[in-house]
Image (cartoon, rainbow, N blue to C red):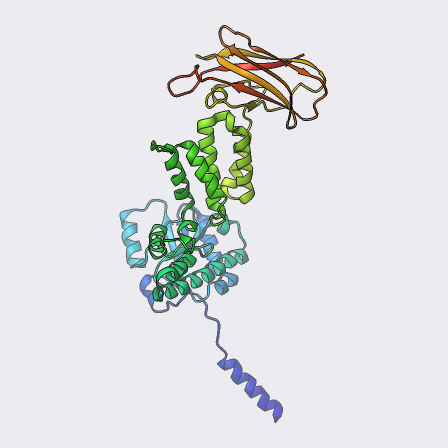
Length: 421
């Protein structure tokens, strides 16, 4: 009797237990309204007629139990995308999707995630869909849904808040990882600035798009106002890089535009600093496009001034400051070495003021005199007397083209450098 009663009790509990909601596949906006719940829409967009594999991937993911479980109570919809968007297709799509605006994707197949109100908050496409297992796609969907729910909760709280507290809630909502901000970022930042004029929350800076932040630096570089220019732009970027409020992506963008500014205005003179910035940019995130491009930047722009290539306009143009001659130096034993500058081409000669040899940070030999390497060379050989074998030799050359350049301050001069005993 007890066993029978227990069985009935268990059966009753099972019948009363809530069942997990599963996504419902609908074929139109109107059909979606009858079953739509808090987790909104998940649209599976595929290339129709121009990539047969695209639709297969979408259907495989739609039928995956892992994806269904990750999608909560979202509504599933298929979105076929033809190669040519004809007027006929646009009309058919409008009739099918009604008030739902279908966002574009950079690649297909794509998974487009929209809130219950139709706001597009996340996209999965490319390798994240094509080359991933259903379990991995499910994990991304689940993470995006969780971020969206948190974002919606913060927005609801912000609607009831005022002042700095409202700014904080809006900033936190816009900062949810992996998903789009609740509206255009410019609008969010403008609201936050108005609510938090003293930037107590830090979000007015933290939310700036990396591109916009970089353009702020570029604006200083291109400004003709007094006190502004490329040196001021680099100083501002350096200050921003030290500020912990900025994200990895923002700082990578600052490194990238700083490298471009140095390359434009300093050429080979900036080689060592360009190498430093490229390595820092890669260290922040070696896997994204800026992190991956850092190696090419270091390879192509970080060589600078070296013995094999000699000097170029990039080397001799710009402010007069000692430039290190990169690469292995044939100065390894005691003796007298001659550094010769030989002009090869260009409209201007190269003017040299000094050649200095360091062992580590210690100056061990120097020849300082005015020399010129042009069509008619004058005092273009510099002599260094080395008394003991340097362990860490570094050769610095000081050019002075202040009187040998065009109206833009650029010298058109090429030549080779030889070091002999």
